[in-house]
Image 1 (tube, one colour):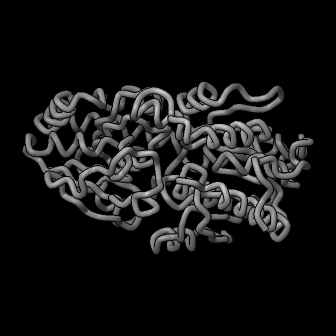
Image 2: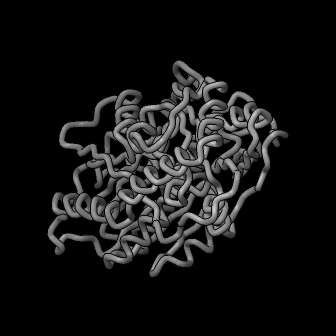
Image 3: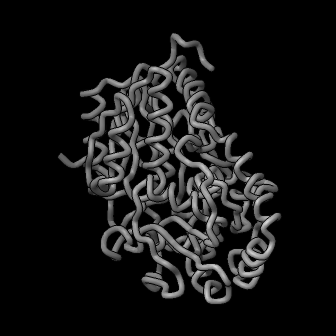
Length: 394
C-alpha cells in the first residue's frame, strides 16, 4: 500500500441507484471506514430505495448526498448530466475531499480540485455488442464522445475484471499516455452471506428487465425441471420504459413459469440465497457479477453464462453454458439437480473462490491507488473547466 501519510482522509464517491454500483459503493465505503477513511456518497439516477437507505445508514461516518439526475446511459440525459456536474463541483467545495472516486464516465472531464479516478462498471457500447450484436446505433454517438472525453481526462481508470477493461479500451480507444489502467475486483462481506439448510430451489437475482441477465432463458427451461426457479429483482425499467438501458422492447412481465419474489431487501436476498441450492446466471453480458459472488458465499452451486468475465472470476468453480443455448442451460441445471454430491462439490469450490474477493482486499487495492494519485497530485486536466458539448446549466 502507499505510504500511510498519503492515504486520503476522505473520498467523494459517486454511485447510481439503479444497479449493482450502489452495493459496490456501500461495500467499499464500509471497508474504507474500517481503515479510517470517510466517504461522502453522491447518488444519481433516482431516489434511494428504503433498503438502500437502510444499507447506507449502517456504514460508519458515511454522508449521503442524494439526487435524481438522469444517468449518462439513459435517454436524452445530457442536461441532467451537466446539472449533476455542477452539483458535484459544489459538493467538492462543501466536503473538501482528498480524492474524487467516479463510478461513471462523463464527469471525469470535470475540473475537480482533488485528484480523481474513474471506475468502469459497464458501458452501453460493450453491452450492445454482447447482447444485441454489432455496434450501438448513431443515437449513442453523444454517449461515445462524452465517455471518451471523461476517460481521456482521468489519470486512472479501474475495472472489476480484465474482460471489462479490455472491452472499455476496445470500444473507446486507448487511454492517454501516463494514465493508469488497473483491475480491482469487486467484493462482498462473507459475514452477511452464509449457507443455510438448502432447499430444492434454483434462484436468480438481478434486474429482470435487462436482457443482459437473460432471465427469459430461465423462463424457457423452468417448465422442464423438477425444481422451481425463483427470481428476485425489479421488472420495471428506469424511466417507466421510455429510457433506461437500450433495450429494443421490454421482456414479458412477469414470466409465468418463474416464481417472482419481487424486489427484496439485502437481508431478504441473503436469506433467499442461503436457502437456494443452485444459482443460475446465464448472462450475455456481465462485467463482474456481484449477485454471483453473494450466491457463492451463500453456498450455492453456480450455473453461469459462458462469457469471458465470468470465466475470469470463477474459473473451475462453476458450470458454464452458452447464453443462447437454452437446452444446454436445462442440461446443466438438471445435472446438478440429479447429482447431490456434484452439487455440493461445486458449491464448496464456489464458496472457497468467493472468499478471495474480500472487502479488505478491495479496500487495500483502492487505498494503494488513491495513495499513488495523491502523490502525483491534480494534473492540468483537473484544473480545467467542464469540457462537455455545452456548459453546465445554472
